[in-house]
Image (cartoon, rainbow, N blue to C red; front, side):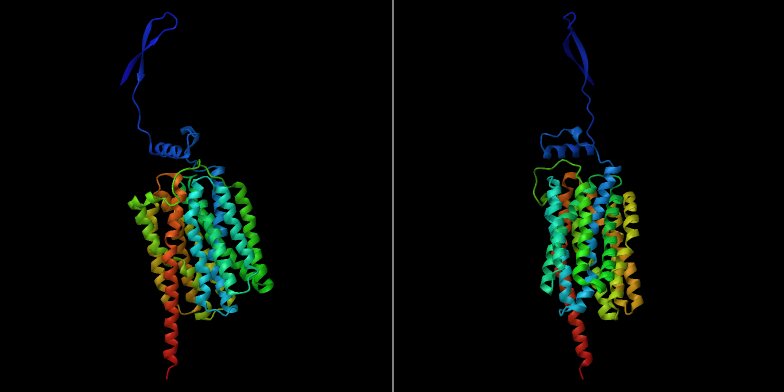
Length: 422
């Protein structure tokens, strides 16, 4: 409907009436999200300042490449701990159970650090956040080369590198997600392939260099690899959205979102065990099956490498049918394969199990951040929500893992005592 308003003709002074269209269309969901972002960012931003996600182009795919480097250097390094576990088991006086605490503490701090760093991305502090996190991780790796005891490794490789990796990994995933909408699944899936490739490359480096140049210089080589990648990330990775100046570190409003709570609750229980195999399988092959250090280290490489295809293909499927509809069967596959570990009693069985577990777990891991992004309505809170999601499973998950390892060790001790008893 149109109504008329009086206006004066400047030529003859007569009053004229011109129609004004009062019909207004409802804003789209994307426009409403942009308005919410602008309101929280401050008065200096106008609706035209924030274009929709490009969903492609040089800038967007550059962020994917930089995010890949971050995940390669953080989770790829974390997932390679199986090689270190096998080496420490043969060189340190501590038991495999005690040594496994180094890797478990590293994972715990990686998850825990992400709980707070995601909000820093939303607030516009990506560069200082990245520099602090990358610096801490590099300090931990280079100090690891000077470590001579179990407790030195616990602090350097466990605590310091874990905190550093945790500070940067969740914000990098969230930053990439803001550049995509329809292709978000494949974009994040490509980023998470850094997890598999890093978990493949680092064990190969350790396996090749450790016997010839020793642990100190092997650690330094790993540090220089990460340093080169972090320099590229500092130069090219940039956030797209304006900073959100208000809001808590933890998005407490997320607990009112039933879908988000259900999703994170499911991950909370599932993450308890999904990383257990990555750490313990190499040591299992060495101690229980009798494999050499070189062969047991190869298991860590295999379990990470075979997950590469599923980290790319499954997110493509998720873009078509939805991340939540995809991650549920992926998690079921991981659980089914995990149960088959009880049937592994020889070298061939270890290799077969590592292949199938790597394929299944790769699909599941690639979908965890995509699922959070798909149920987050406001892109300027995606860093906070991804950080909150990442650290949920770290608390009881690590405690559960310690308890499980302790129980397994106790059962084996009792079994050995009974067999030796007259």
